[in-house]
Amino acid sequence: MKKFLNLTLGLLIASSLFVSCSDDDDNAMPNLSVNNGIVLENSAAVAITGSELNVVDTDTDDIDIIYTVTIAPENGILANASDPTTSVVNFTQADIAASKIVYVHDGSQALTDKFSFTVTDGDNILTGIFNISIGEKQIGYFYVLNEGNSNGSVTMINRNNEVTNNYFSSVNSGVTLGQYPQSMAINGEYAYIVVTTGSGAGYVEVVTASDFVHYATIDGLSYPREIAFANGKAYVSNGNGADANYAKQNNEVYVIDLKTMTKTGQIAVGAGPEKMIVSGAKLYVANSGGWSNDDNTVSVIDVDTDKVVETITVKSCPKDMAKDANGDVWVYCAGVTSYDGNWNVVGIDDAGISKINTTNSEVTSYVLTNITSFALKNICASKDGKSIYYMSDAVYAMNITDTALPTSKFIDATFYGMDVNPVNGNLWLCEGTNPGKVLVYSPAGSKLKEFTVGAMPNSTTFSY
Image (tube, rainbow, N blue to C red):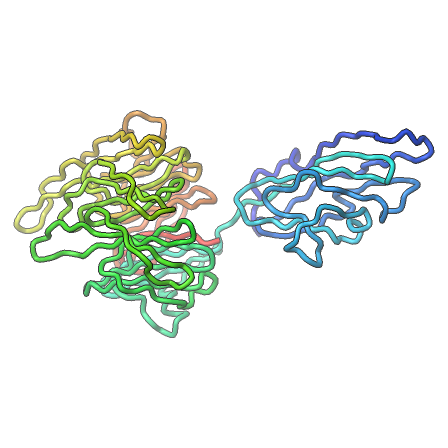
């Protein structure tokens, strides 16, 4: 059973104004006797009956009591039950009595809606507002992406906490996902899994989101990393992998036609592009430097023209990003790592978090020290976008209005990746082990549960 949030008694009480437009004393004034509003689950449709909305007129039949919608609902439509996709403006009390008028929610995250109406018996007019309370949209499935050691996999966890490992393979006749899947995102009816192979022939595996069955493969990629969506297009950040000298190479973002699932263009950006974030009409691309780890820029792409309109300098080796409640972009910059002859880390230079004001492109940077997390996915925003979670030697939580990094640890551990449940704000934290684990923490920092998943999990994708 889905739980409704913020469904208070006040939302169920509609307010109405009564206005008489008649000078005919022989015609009885109609009475808006019931205006209780409705409650429904997210994305559902529910009939408005006489128990929720009723006008009584002693000398007028129900079929002659006519409602007119003067301000339509914003998060759904009023429709006839026989045609729930077409909105209606007029209906009668007889229609309501027969449960013919339905409110169809559009699946948005809004918890309330309403419509304004007039109702007349032909001589007199009443006005009113009908209030609608909507249950919060619930997550149906949690998909954990496991990089694996030679073959990656997906773990599916349902809302009953039941775990299915190797989920992709199980619904695709044993076909494996492939080497080193890096990221995953859901857009509409499809889920997109970005796979980076050791051979330099990466691809995007496309499955139907409802059942995870293979739909298409987007190939022709060398070292794909992340995917983002805007203007009916997909964007895939792509690199070249390592050469013998770990040389710096500028790379590209590919533009994908979501109808044909093919590349239709490419946009030159900095070296080693990783995470991408859409804010407004712009796509922000973190250029990490790739294997050379020596880029310190964010490319800004206009999603209408698919052109780079600005290059912003941040701290070194930007790899991950999050967007806050103001639409500003927070960039996690891992810094330039130096190693000894045995590939032991001996130093990290110029690491930090850079906040980009997306209105004027001003950058505010904070220095990170004592980094022990070497994951790619190190930053995310809270459900309301007013806090930023990030990792260095632990997980920290920072209010977006703060002017300095926090000193107290939110969770005294580091992880291979972290994400926030967009409905309840829980943190899903991946341990990069074999088998892997996912730990779930509340927004208050209390551990709630843990799951055993596939090898080297790096992220969780939430599906409605």
